[in-house]
Length: 154
Ligand code: FES
Image (cartoon, rainbow, N blue to C red; front, side):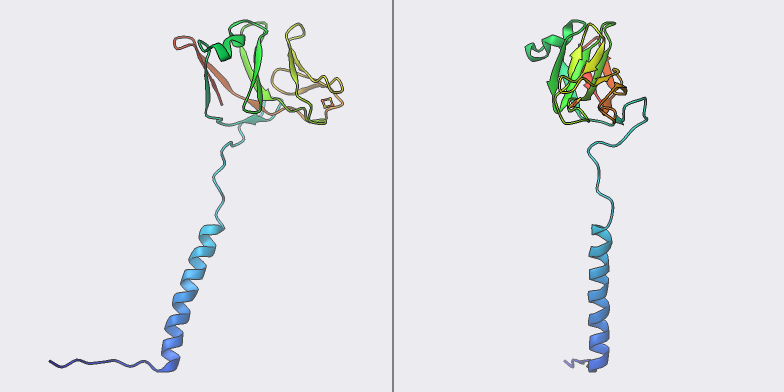
């Protein structure tokens, strides 16, 4: 049996190795330079900045969510204040005031979001009624399923 060996000269060897390493480095660079997937993507704005999916669904039959069974009730969940307004619709906005970070409250009598920190008020879509806050609260879409009595946020 006869075997043949091909030999590479030094220049050809380094040319091949260099091309291979270059391809690997370029491949890694391109894959690491792509945009990361976002957990929450921005959606259409209706006053306050509207967020995308939060993956949160609340079952209103659960005792922990009982406050949402009555108009004017609210609770905090995953950094949001979730409320049932005077007319029975649901809202979800960031619970952190954009002025100085105080946790906002739902003002059932005024049917608005109120910040006890320095008196800012926001509409139920997160937009500003009055400052000192200069930016709206981030708002999330809510979808209520009366059959399953569940509220989907985002
Ligand atoms: S922290 Fe909300 S108004 Fe100042």
